[in-house]
Length: 403
Image (cartoon, rainbow, N blue to C red; front, side, top):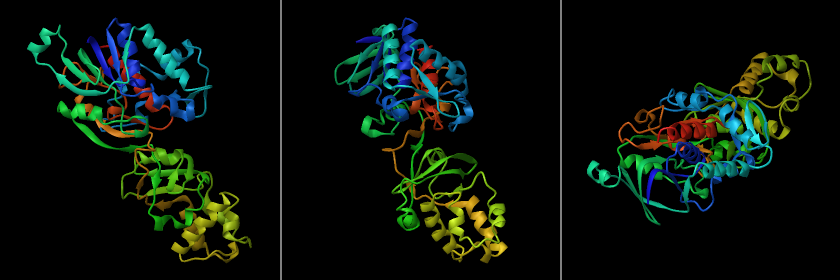
């Protein structure tokens, strides 16, 4: 089989690239090993697909080359994708902070992309496992009408002038994630930034978490910080540790051995609040349950008061210095995770194909002409809230305009 463009990976980025290349009259083939199309789109956003964020900008992305994503994001914006959604009469809503979701089902986004691919004349080959990728010498390429790449799949051999790698990352292996994209990069001598799970729950050593293991399901509005990153969202206790939006966000910045700092009362001045009740006979835990969930307060007070060599007692029995120490803990609770719950529960993969090796305008390899990398396989990772899909649309569009 001979094609102008072969795209490995028929997810969000791959389909977007195929659509744009097809519109330009290119003969495009999408190859994917999965039996079901775009499972990551289907399960996203609780089945409603948080397909973009109105306010997506470079600052919402992590990369060893932080300015790399600017060009693609500027040329295909959230508003451009919303226009596509509206063209297909897909109803949507904004939850918060620019996060856009389908009113009905994420399947609508998948079907929209399928229809756009059909209109653009894109061909499909799935399920089809790619076994080998080769870059032909100039002599061999000239013998095949300038086709530079040869893909050997379980079904056939494909010759292509341009090859796009849209294979995604390692997150959620149970729906088909694989390391193929990184292997292809390595094969061609293209660097890959270290990989690790991102937007993922954190775990704690059993001895550090004993007091909290029975409060699974309790959620708190908190401000969580690590290094220079700070996120104010919900924090959720699980059987093994912490999750919820605030933890998923900060997990992308956290490294093993580092501490997290949790502000349990981001809307309160804890010192002033405690001082206002200094003459009260109310027990400290009972006072705190006015501001925080009771089950959490009981566990937290057990741990914190032990660390401070104090006991639970009426407010009027605490000295000012003791109240200041308690206030500091409420605003600056220090915890040290032992690890993450891993790729199985991670929403994204941090790291990836080194962006210094790619053109920021086209996603093409600087080393291998005609080879492109787009989407999650690239070292560009967004925050929670629609940003990673926007990177898929933008990077796919950038490559699709030139392949």
